[in-house]
Length: 62
Image (tube, rainbow, N blue to C red; front, side, top):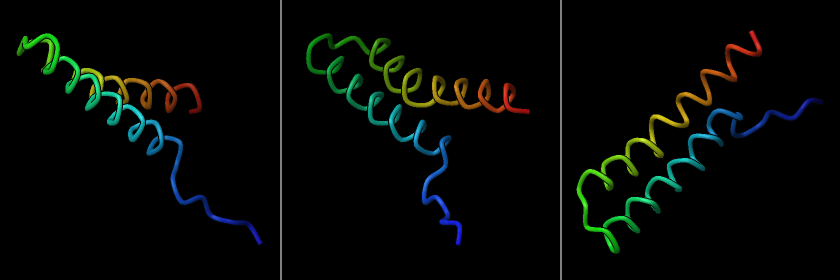
């Protein structure tokens, strides 16, 4: 009997980069205090980067 995976590779990638984005946002907020850097850290690392990685992975498999 094949065992279903609980999380797909895309979900794992997204979760890892969400954690990294939140960590980068917190560190930027604590040490830099620059709103633009905080925004780039949160959205760039937490949302845009995993989306790009997942799309590239999807295109290379298909």
